[in-house]
Length: 145
Figure 1 (cartoon, rainbow, N blue to C red):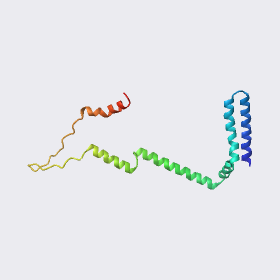
Figure 2: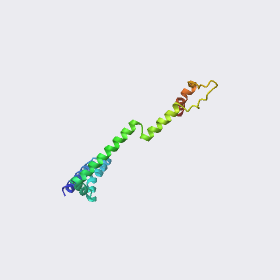
Figure 3: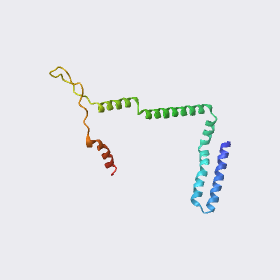
Figure 4: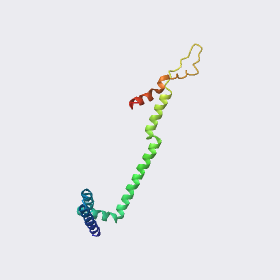
């Protein structure tokens, strides 16, 4: 009952301020003030104020809001940790496997030569030369530079 009275008084005061503003030939501002002033009255007429008043003094509702807040904190924390680690466990495992394959491609099985020994070392990787900057060139071309 008190909440409805307060909302009605706020709306009446806001409409009064809008009328004074309109009298001063600031019609756009007066319309905006009137729009804000009508919101509390609309909330009273739709029953939202009664619902909020019932919810504000309900321990069960506050426990529910607390659980929703805790749930949100857990979601946010796990998402932050996941981003810092670089994704989910499955994504990290796939990234490590892709990195391992890119760094050391599978070499053919060494065959035993005449002397019965296998080559001890693989030949060193050849420098790519101009290919080192091909990805950078592609990015620059993409941006028109």
